[in-house]
Length: 213
Image 1 (cartoon, rainbow, N blue to C red):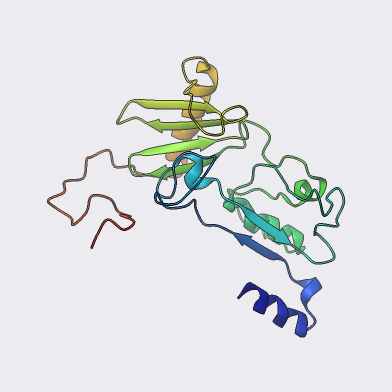
Image 2 (image 1 turned 135 degrees about the vertical axis):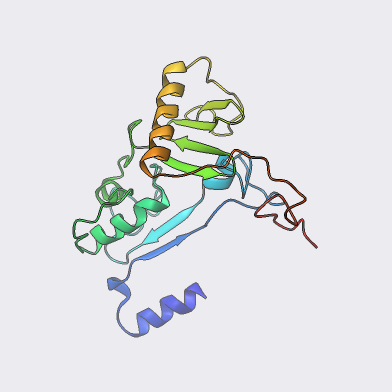
């Protein structure tokens, strides 16, 4: 189907005026394979939120655009879906009209192959059920106040999230906890810390992924 879309756009002479973005929405289900990442869909482990993506702008940004080449055309920077809108608007030279966005314009970084979110303050946040996660280029925090849980992983050396280094890196742990609490407060999010009573609903998991028959 992607090929059919490309063929049609080519037929109408708009190929070089089209930016193609293809990405997975989340990691594989628990029955799938997310190697080398831990976890999968319906989790905040890298296996659930670290996904592949491809972007192609024929003649302007493709495998032949320096500093990329046909044999070396992977961007290894840290970018989230919230960055796609401001980045695409920048690529197409469209104004954002003063709109406040959480995402960042990464177009210049994609072109130069530089990091778009290099600092601790450039974090991306998630919420899921009764816990949340904060990720920077290097560090990843899994956090739940209700369960007194604070796990920190150094993704530079442990992308599999196997070794909790929170106690060895209290400054980074506490800084990310502070970021997360501020994010919750600034956005007026309300997180439920109550255990779901199975008697009230058909399944305690809001996304049961095949458990129901």
